[in-house]
Image 1 (cartoon, rainbow, N blue to C red):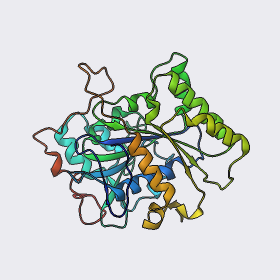
Image 2 (image 1 turned 90 degrees about the vertical axis):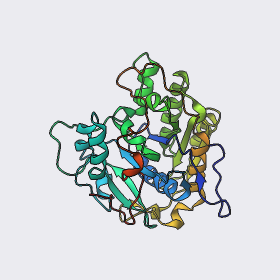
Image 3 (image 1 turned 180 degrees about the vertical axis):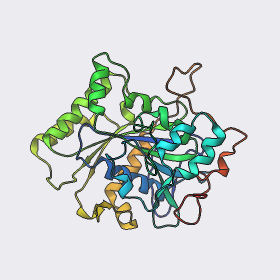
Image 4 (image 1 turned 45 degrees about the horizontal axis):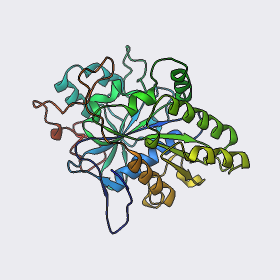
Length: 326
């Protein structure tokens, strides 16, 4: 998983055919373009990577219904969403069958869909939104070569709370997930306050013992405000604390008609390709499965023999951007 450089001559970047690449996308504030960056990263991973199983790339939308932009970005809306799927995790056979009905999709323009798990379809009365940590999502990850976890704007608070003696935050849960290759992606804008929040969060993450070389900071100039002198000085302070810093240049065409642009031209931009390379290079080796995994964090296990993973829609993409069997 080192390097991650891609060129027209080398073709797609091969990912680990056994352990999924997991990228929790985090921030300390809203309005920094976290979901847009998540979408562009997922689309770029979809276009520029492969694995031996031809598994899918997916976005896991962690925000509850009514608070997420993803339902408005979909080309296919699942009959049932994550609220329905949440009630099936205890039964492996039922879960494998219901994943087909609970997976929305975005058409990436190459005949293969980018899967999206979001709370769509009929409301499940007992479901109040998905946890941003791995406890809910672990059963899905085994079917993917890469999963982009679109988180929320509370991770700075969680890291600060953990540093003050509170329980482990979402970043810690993802970055220490067994049997997965994980790179954290922190999204900020280039404002002095945005870089100050990021510096504070990375300081707390380092104090909490997170693997900082597996952390990538994306400085996303979503609003075209550019850099201030104080921002540049804070960027310098960040440089030695994280695995990489990638600057995403302002371009209003990255959001066309209020949704991210998935054209080859946009996904082939130097800054987007640099983001993909940085994330893949930062992804750490998978941690071994602990002898005893405390609840509620489950270990990733192979798909049950009775439900071969290659028979699910997560492994075999149909010829159109609609999940098979939906």
